[in-house]
Length: 446
Image (cartoon, rainbow, N blue to C red; front, side, top):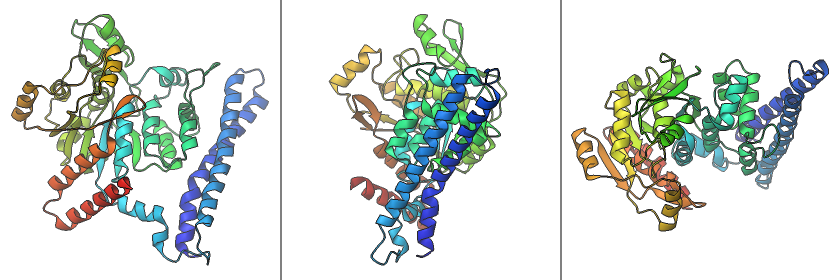
């Protein structure tokens, strides 16, 4: 068996070994805590049993996943039980191609960003997702309050979007407990919380999670400092907390005027700044304007780095408005809010849907107070005056009764535009990138 065979085995089982080690560590910690902490003075009995259960689940699943990966490799051996050419190692072959793809930075959070990432990873593995850490609601908010850690929810969703995982593992990580103390809590959030507990920092924990799940590219928090998001309403009221801003906006019937963070002077990750400077294309959104996208852009130096970068800057507009956040907003209103908060002309292209929403889907969203984000004539004049190019097309699809961006079509359009603009004078690189795009399209059409 040649070197390619052993290389494939190493790549395939590395994450299972790491996952198993983590499981053993968690189980060991729980047993030690139980033997030395019977009266629960340091760690509660519930947390001890949770750690033990988490450790056992990860250990068992790592064994299952490792054996399954190995069996798939041996099943595919030819009659001589050798790999005669590197081409039979499809994973390595595809990865080597995607490693030469465009350098893409995406900035935001929430479901919209994770949808986009699933499309991007089919075209390139040079992806850096810079994710907000201002979330203070739901399971993330509970962990933030109880453990003093940064919220893991948006980061978890982005990691899963870029991960190379088995379907059952994704279901496990997205599972929410339905009863007991951890009702409503997400298993993936607890895994990240456990990793934080055995790591030097939140940043280090997220890097390890990226490695375990063989993430295409990387997912990083915009900052590792504890920040709180505030919203100023048009009636002058100041609302504290990301989750409370849209709620109070609706209750007081007063639109959001602006958002800001405290402390004001927080440092972004160096890795985030480097990715922005070296990017071919930077994409904002899709996602909640005031609570997912802007919390990243108002972190000190982020906008400055974006402005200095030679990357193509793209904003992907939401398809529907969000009650309490962007009621009655047009595409232009979204862009104006970003420019107002950043004081820089950091958007060159806007991608927006112009397909009519199916009536049955529209009625469902209407009941929740949402409606399509329109493209007004005045928006077109605004974009023209600011040198912003508006790209309109059918960028939506319906999945399980919900509107989603057509991630593949949207990413195809954005990346092809970036190639044409950035590498038109570099014929060799232009040809290489177009070959990668063509292969991605062919694979998607199979």
